[in-house]
Amino acid sequence: MIPRVAAIVAALSGLVPGALASRTASCSKSTFKSLDLKGIKITSLDVTPAHNYSTSGRNATGGAGVIPDIPGSPAPTVDICFIAITYTHHGQKDVVNAYIGLPLNAKDWNSQFLMDGGGGWYAGGQPEVLSPVLAGYASSSTDGGHGVTASTGDWALTKKGDIDWPTVWDFSSVAIAEAAILGKMATKMYYGSEPKYSYWHGCSTGGRQGHAMAQQYPELFDGIVGGAPAVNWDKFAPAGFWGPLKAQLLGVQPPICVLEAFTNAAIAACDELDGVKDGIIALPGQCHFKASSLIGQKVQCVEPNGEITITDKMAELVAAVWDGPESENGRFEWYGFHYDSNLAAMIGTTCTSIDDCTISPFFVSDDWVKVFLARDPSFNTSTLTHQDYDRLFHQSVRQFSSVIGTENPDLSKMRRAGTKMIAWHGMQDQLVPTNGTVDYYNRVLELDSCAADYYRLFLAPGVTHCGFGPGFDPVETVLGTLKAWVENGTVPDRLPATAVAVAPSNTSTTRTGYLCPYPEVFTYTGGNPNEASSFTCVK
Image 1 (cartoon, one colour):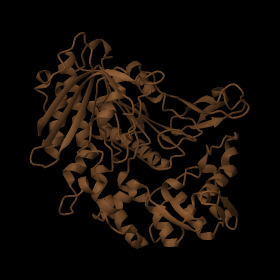
Image 2: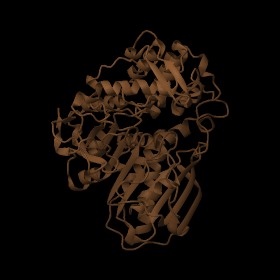
Image 3: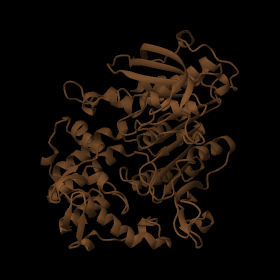
Image 4: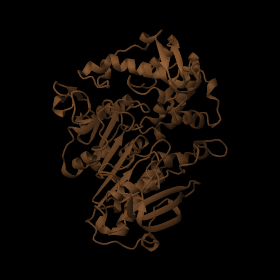
């Protein structure tokens, strides 16, 4: 991998910010004929100018979604210069597709560059360049070496059943960096000047991708948004299979209504610890709700219809998901989920009747165990023992930490590059444990006590994975906050956010507030809970 990394870093030397473009070259192959990178062989180059290109339905692909600094609803069409590149790396048999989008007219370009991240196993694609171009940015994306319709086993394994390491590296980080460089080169070729500022905006896999850039290629970006970052991938991915394993070992498959009963009871018990009744557990560290307190309680379910009594095994299963995986001898392996997270995301069940349900594992974790660890897409996970799980967990860390773990806390390269990064994570996240991100950030601070000068983490009470939920959601403001930090030096001591309004409120369905930079805690001080002035940040 060293030659590929060296080639990427070497390519950075020619990237110097320029002035706002006043002209464009033609949107044709001839303009981009010299588009190339050392170490790759371009096998296909397509360039298409498109007027009034429809954006309808083109952002529902798993990425971060519409870039939030587009005011109001996104425009239905855009004038764009599309570039599609297919290439392979010398000596390898990978196939990577990169996509570049440029505002067709120079007057519509804001002199900046922005990439939007992927989600799950989806690294990115053509749709991810549309929102940035709508907002005036030049943009690029990549499929990370595999198409959106390809099964994980098809791209992650060779025909012999071994890990296809070049393609895994493509997905993990290499193709992301190459797409950024190719996008910036194309921008220079088209407008005659480099972007003045370059940004990354992503959540989930996109958040992990952003952290990979911060750790490995920070020279590519002036600012990075890494929402709900799926870092510590080598631990969080197998940890996501802990719930299904525990259910199997206990011989219990509770219907969704039972899982909801546990969540609702925990929220009722801990909601007002912060002084506000709003359906949010804002202080999870002070919540000591016991799942066992519901044993014997009857739950009336609708789908499937019927009454069910909560058992000790159901309570043990829920407690295990909250606590997180541990080894057979009780050793900590990874973090669990907060009490108000949706349990069905990790141990969701499909039921034919109240007492006949089947567990549906989180697809990323299911793929991880079957494809990356067992290396058999048809592997029967129902036979796994706790000892087997421990062995697979250790295998995951040993083999994939340096490849896709994205957990290197040494950000000295990013500090020297002058790059700024904002990470944020919803505390109701049901897919990626919030405390995994806190763990990573604490390790960064251990290496550099001044890391907050260039990297800040904000925790969002009551917010689910990458947004939504009743809590304080920063999706609409985080990119703008980052840009103010990068371009104006405005340090983000607060991150504006919007939540569902609570009584007393008869004027709006939402309330505004802000998130606090970790380790400060968003704290209610009294007054109207729908007003930001009723809260402060406390260390």
